[in-house]
Length: 272
Length: 293
Image (cartoon, rainbow over all chains, first blue to last red; front, side, top):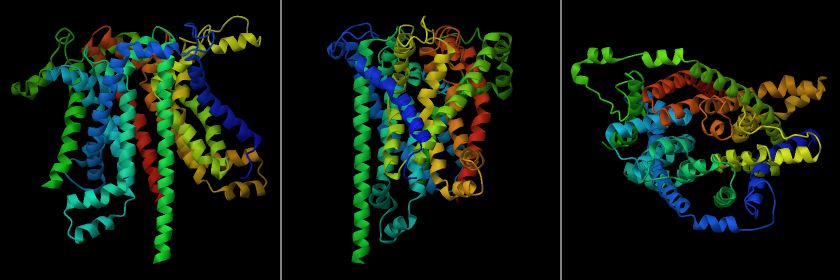
């Protein structure tokens, strides 16, 4: 296991080339001078300038960001509650239906979720806009949050919580002071997942948005249908950069925390 | 009391925004086309009693789906594209997962992150990135013509081939991760034993490694197949006018033809088709969880 065989080296190289070359090309050509995206005509950052001056695009970005913050925050609260109910509350009336409703949205085709929510909103007479997109995004992303959080709750040592209750905490205090700090990394990754899902969603947003609220993916989709454009390349580059920085930072932070915990545990063992 | 609130809040949310919308889709799929033209407001008049409700049900939209060949062709073509692209994703993904599991220990977290990173990147952008590569004057054709492999550009964009490329590309992490997890758990001494007992490397792989990674392969295949079946974004960006996929048909039925009852019926049938793979997937996951305990 020390050295890679030639087969493994080749498959890893080709595999990661396949995963990354399309995005690298996209990034390179976002700095292309020419509007013809497939012909290189010299380095330029003019498409980034165009992007900043594009009011409609900025509006859409702002709408998308607000929707993502609101929906992922509500989804994290609801999803954590749902995870707690699923893992801790044992039997209650309608439990099977409840867990079914948590897992079904994960595998539901987006076109169906979008269509059904739109028909609901029309039935209720709700004007389609930011509110309806937030409601829709919250609904599917709370299920993802709940799966992430419940996988952490399952491995959680319950006696810690019981100790807190024995020492006079109310159930809510026990949750806030003991459970929440321990499951916090899962709750944060749940929030991040919900946030990215919301930023990224095209199909459900297209069904549930109205003329008053256009999100960035809707804008990108309508531009992309007309063909490749350098402005969209520039926008994609910015989005890829943000995600890359975010993912690398998150993994470094979690690595540092893991190291620190290891050290603390060692220190505790030595002191004992 | 507190327990009751804790259960009720997420429960009611999902009932109102997940289950009820479905019932509405179901109801509209069974309603009369003429009555259900937009602006259609679903009306639930339970006052008339359940029999009146049942009498109103109308299967004409489903009958319409069977008479117009567009729909069953679209279902079949979605199934074909989903099955074939799942298989292709497996072919591409397995060697990568295998290479990762055999890589030196200290590389693995980085390799893992490299697989996960595209997953966090916008799906739409990843699909879009292939437009510039596959188009007539795209980078792929430029390279092929420059090296003299072909003399006239290939038409790949706006065909089913481009859809396959798009599905393999975007869903590859879903295939790699479960297979990698299965291979990572594998006991290396089993392979050594097989080789000691006279297996060639390939035989050892085929008789020992591959069967032991079966659960990962199954999980990965479902994770690709299920979303690929109802895919809309990939066929509408990379596919052509001839690419028939049911997600696209539903979208067009709804937004272009504005035929809500038929769109709803298409959705219900798609859901029925998905029930089988979803149940199989759940079973596989459960078996795996039990095996781990």
